[in-house]
Image 1 (spheres, rainbow, N blue to C red):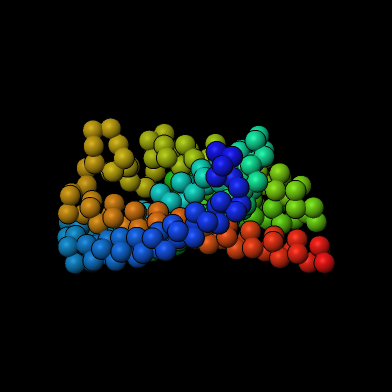
Image 2: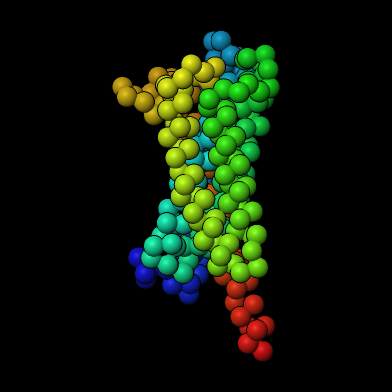
Length: 236
C-alpha cells in the first residue's frame, strides 16, 4: 500500500483514471436517468413521486459509503501514517456531506406527498441527520487548528468514533417502528423491487459512485498541488 501512498505516483495514476471515471459517471447517470424517467413504471401506490427514489436512494447509499471511506482513511492515517490518508479523508468528507444533504432534501420532497409532512423524527431520518452533522464536525475540526496536524488527528478520531452510526442507519428500520420503508434491495432473500425499477436504480448508483471517485481524485490532486505551492513559497 505504501507504493500507492506516494503523492507523485498518485498524481500519475489519477491523471490516467480521472477522465475515464468522469466519462463513466456521465454515461451511467445519463442511462440511469433515462431508465428512471422513461422506462421504469410509476408505483401503484406512489405514482410518479416514486421517481425521486432514483436520486434519493443512491445519495443515501453514497452518504454511508463515503463516510466509511473517510473513517478508513482516518484510521490508516492514524495507525500507519500514510502520507495521502489524511488528504483522502479530508477530500472525501465534503463530498459525503453533499451526498447526505441531497439525501435529506430529496427524502423530504418524497416524504411530503407520501407522509403528509416534510420531516419526522423517524429513526432512519434522525440517524442520517446525525451523519450529516458528523461530516460537518469532521470538516470543522480539520480546519479548527493553526497546526494542521492536530486538526487532522482530531477529525480522524471523530470519524472513527462516528462509524457506530453506520449500522444504526442501516438497521434502524428493523430495530424500531419507523415510517421509513424497510430495505427492498440489499436484503436476505433478494430484492423485492421490480426489475424494471431496479436496474435504473443500480445504474444511477454506479454513476454516483464514479462521480464520487471523480470528485475525490480532483480534490486530492488540488490538495497536493496546494501543498506543493506552499512548500515552494516557504522554500523561497
